[in-house]
Length: 259
Image (cartoon, rainbow, N blue to C red; front, side):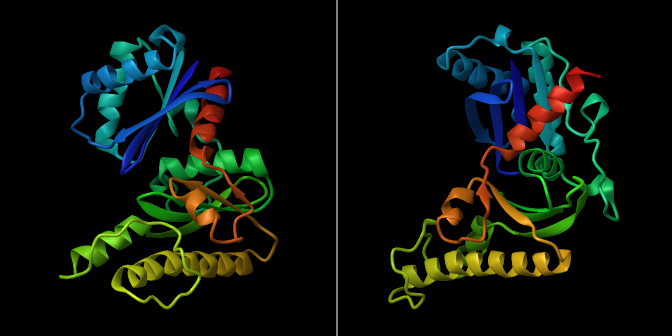
């Protein structure tokens, strides 16, 4: 079985796969100081609860946008699974796609892996919207080449900035507003409308501009933690694919196994 590890700025996601089928998925807050030992104590228990053993894991692949987290994840793989991990974008797990931007090496591993999975799953010209700590918009052409994109503050970052820089505004939860009205009658409703529908308007506007620039029909794929929430509020998405990053890691691992 494959253990796929996706270390993002907010969470580290661990997924246990048999082929492309996810058998278990767990997440923990990203902390570069967390040791391989700490990861092991936590992860081994969860794998056992799911009915598997560490001996079931035969391959490990790691993708990270937090360089300081990589070392301890490698220790986890080597010391507790006795496996030399694949690193997304390196060696046998090279992306093997055309990254057609000014600084290809600056592309985050999560975005490259999403591009690989989106092309394999959906084909054609694509716009991938990933709701993470930042919200990213990535353009992949019908050949599977990464053509560039947009980075915007994630909705929780936007809310943190709003609350953290004002004296009286309260902390609110991100959810679909109950009322369809965009004229709020109290402070909390006005904040939710501004954050939620403002974010929807931003997405729809940027996607319309990207589509116009591409000049060809392009499918829009949403992924990331809040993809389902926003998928309920707009028809701009052609598909909501929450497991896009994990599937991309599985594709890289499959390719590496044949090299």
